[in-house]
Amino acid sequence: MMMAMTTMSNNTVKMMGLEGSRRNARRSSISNLMAKIGAFLRSRLQASSETRWNHTRNESEELLHQARCMSWAANSALTCRRTF
Image (tube, rainbow, N blue to C red; front, side, top):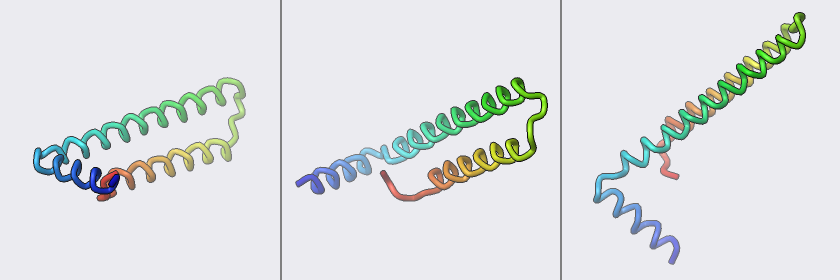
């Protein structure tokens, strides 16, 4: 029964031409998430460099690695063709 309701609502969405709106909403929420992640990483890097003048290269590289992984995950979600 639940599957029939989901299929019917998806068909209704397609008939109304709203599938683009759903996709845009998902992209918008992913973009917001990426902005929050970026702000968090920048604040963490700034706080770390303010507390210690001798900010180690390994810590900087770790933050860059985290940022790249999060960016890759968000880009993968944007290009994913499945509807959630």
